[in-house]
Length: 178
Image (cartoon, rainbow, N blue to C red; front, side, top):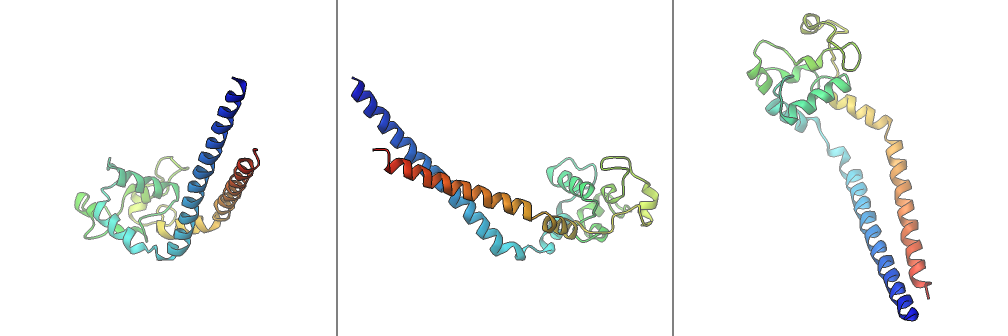
């Protein structure tokens, strides 16, 4: 009975090692494909696509749908306005249709701290320096991403290295388990 139990256990271990190897290999390949696609296509990201979506779908500060909420969060967090600047909310935009006479959303205005009160809505509407974020979010976010790209890249390479070691180790265990 003990010999059969040991054989059953060894077969279970072999199956687990093969399953582990296949699982880690799939994750490894997906990460590798994602990294290659990112490196190949990252220069094709253009502000025009974002601008057309913003002009068509952004509803303003009180917009409850995900698109407006996400843009408001992005503009407040990165202290930016629109894709290229405050002019993105001009004539022909959904924002102008819903809020005639308002040049840009309040999310474009400077705040007292990250989530604090507006420094001055009237000064922001008058485009007074220090009260409005003139810089567009596309360039602001791009600069932030370029500045901190080394950390995610290093972490990704470390994870890929650990996965390679795990696959190698599981294969060694599988073939040397006799």
